[in-house]
Amino acid sequence: MSEAQSIPGWRHIYSGKVRDLYASEDPEDTRILVVASDRVSAFDFVLSPGIPQKGELLTTLSRWWFDRLDVPNHLVEGEIPDAVAARSMLAMALEMLPVECVVRGYLTGSGWAEYTEHGTVCGIPLPAGLQNGDRLPEPLFTPAYKAPMGEHDENITFERAVELVGADRADELRDVSLDLYRRAAAIAEQKGLILADTKFEFGVDADGVLRLADEALTSDSSRYWDAEAWKSGSTPAERMASFDKQIVRDWLTANWDKQGEPPALPDEIVERTAERYRELIERLAG
Image 1 (cartoon, rainbow, N blue to C red):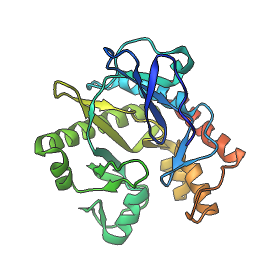
Image 2 (image 1 turned 60 degrees about the horizontal axis):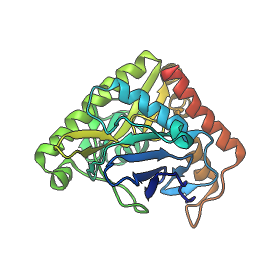
Image 3 (image 1 turned 135 degrees about the vertical axis):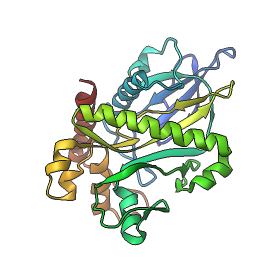
């Protein structure tokens, strides 16, 4: 992973697969600077090269959604350093919860793989006869355990989520996540887009208030499809061409056996992925 950028007045404290976190050098300032990089990850590896402007695009989309979702979030006011202004957010320090809140409105990805074998998604029984890409009878809350850096996130049952965060908090995570998904899906539908699934991360502030954190409904955390293509496409690839890094995943699957370090991404794959990120912003935000 590339070294975090040096930012005057801020001290680097953590790097995830995509974001770098900084604390203020002013001991009385408890805010966190969240800087999105152009790094791209797949199959738990950070790949090379990055996707041009990805950090800026992710930040723009998160801000756009935070403005439209009437739910407490981690954003706070303040001046952001010019050097990273386009791809950064100022956030309050939160106690992050170890449950990744996944909501699935459509049958695809790992959910489809499990359904074909067991007739379930994350252990939840579904009607027989569903096809890859079909809309689910109701959106499903399918939590995951947020693994430490370098380890695999793990799908968990709701009962396990209760063990991790307590019954009341687990109920709140489920209810808020499903509500956010339904509202966001309705907004996306007005733009000719399907929000197939998404994941949210939450933290708790000093007063015990649950707050939406990290990112909101971006190309990295969500699967968006073109609604018209989903209706008229004759193959799964046509119906579910997503506005995200699926191009990267598909290329890696075809060109790498998942042993050792992944190969460098070709220029064409990088540019096609960047174009999908840009197109989603244009479709949603104009």
